[in-house]
Length: 341
Image (cartoon, rainbow, N blue to C red; front, side):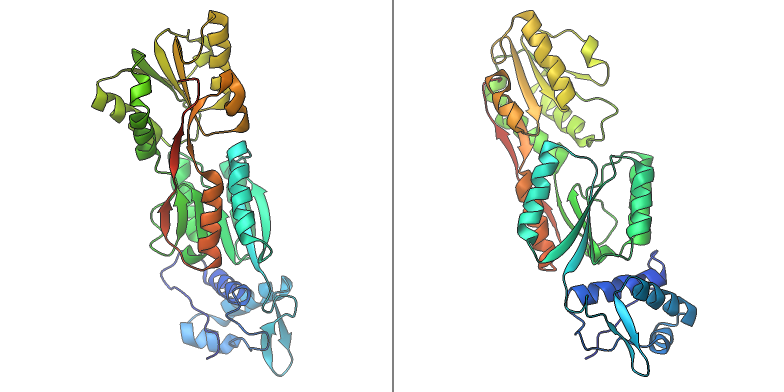
């Protein structure tokens, strides 16, 4: 049976973009044979009750991008460069870091040479994120995104993705965004549950201290689920606790306190304060950091960390994508015990 273009009348994605996405995906997923004629403009217009102008606009853009070609007297066909070719994937990260590098490496190792990947970074800038999504929509068979916004910007980002990208071509890393139905694919961290479980596992080692102190800057785009998980743990164990949201560099370090540190720059500040006080991590104070890195393996003779398996996160999503099996998976989260606790 010839490949059928599908249009969702209730979708927020413009119909011409739905046609572009459908044809691009069909070619790069090898659902359209190299010699297979695409439905004509009249056929698509009649079947889906859309204007000829809409279909012509989609086919014109597909031709401009070199994805299809028109053969006089015969119709539209995949171009030789795309027929049965590789999938084209947009990989959109929020920032560069050591653990994002692990996600990238895990993803690329699994994808291998089966796809052409365009890697972009939006540096947690919503306007740049919006520009990239609007410019890249319809150019790829799949869109892999690490969403990292909070408050109103998170809602705006969800609306933007819903408007411009088909749900079954959207794959989410590190966080899940509800509201895209069952078609999306996501491998994510459950921040609230993860930190609660990690602190519970570390409870015996924490007993040498009198209080817990979470350092969570308000400007961070990390999930507020971390705060909720920390508070829930402290309540469940009747721990004396404190949360610093800003200006940690001006907060004195306290003896008999275990510090839970989210950002690396706050970790550096804490290490300096411990050394200035002449104390030893794991004795007078405890240090528990978020996300592992090679530096944390050696700093203070080894810093205890709570960390997701980032390389596995990337490879698991790539496996879902290449096998066309969307779903949602919570990634493994570990407590790695070292000298600082």
